[in-house]
Length: 376
Image (cartoon, rainbow, N blue to C red):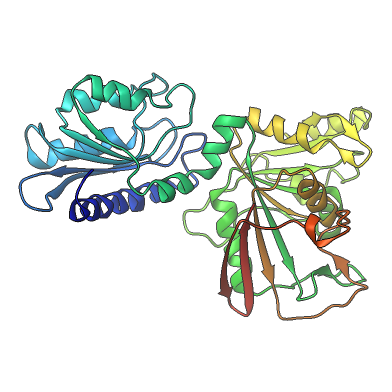
């Protein structure tokens, strides 16, 4: 085991790698976010000679970028250097060659990893290959932080399903609209800006047909520098949403999926397809479209990170089905009353023991609002 002082040094370098990894937020899917630093030993703490992160799926991985930058910076060999990387290096050929080969070829002396890669093609094999090559490997540096960074990737690679974040924006008494259906605007400008930042980093944004009919949303990203639109999804079992809806516009810029029932109008489906909308038919249950089938189809299309923005029926269905991984609950300092529209439909909770409880909670303020982030 390393000394306490060495452990602190290792954690310092891993935090720098984590900061680099976060630069790929929203751009690496379906790959994980990864950061790496190359350190030249020689003094008590050493010094960083190369930095890298995975910027986008299909581009070079963090380890390779860091090694290449180190070689460029030193204008020579980096043999004997240490590598700190937030995720176990891969050893499979995909769009890019395996990182373990680059590490071995560069003459890296020691590799410090944060999280293990749950990908069945990698899991533990990358570490074993490096060790067989005579490289010392230390695992688990800031493991919790490194694992949490790729929560969406971790779930998708193991289950094939996207990581589901449920966003709720309500009054203090949990209402999303007045009894007349007015919901503009419950939350503050700061909260709404934050939601646009979320859309910029997720793969997909989803709403139910009720919300789409009531609000006619665009679900695009606005006001974010360098932002991009995520795939838009609407659940519409009977294809009630008109073809003129905003969700069916700007197809050249952003894709739209509509999930519907097997008996929904084929004529309406053809009209939507002609507009560039992808129509996906799934099985139905007594409660509506099979949410399990919806999530499975999204996962098959490479969606790792899904943001659900409404409404109450969809929220309840996802919560009852155990499909939600995280809730983002924006609460505004207003009261609407019991005749307002509830944020979550009936869950069938008969006693406190059966109430849904978060395992972890974070709280912060946005303008006049309070944001509670809870994970199951």
